[in-house]
Amino acid sequence: MKAVIYSKDFCPYCEDAKILLKAKNIEYTEYVVGVDISRDEFLKKIPNVKTVPQIYLDEEYIGGYDNLFARFLQVP
Image (tube, rainbow, N blue to C red):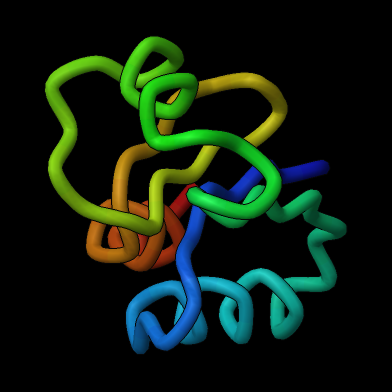
């Protein structure tokens, strides 16, 4: 499984998401909004969002940290 995370500097939820992904041994690519991707590009890619992190798992849009956390609470 691979993840993509859109984040920004000094974001505690972004850090928590990265810690959770690491704990689950999931490799991720991080794009820092304003550094790796412009704010406009970010909003075109994921319209109608107002917060980071925004996370994809295997190209499936998950949402923010709370959605990621809930995803791992699901019993298979």
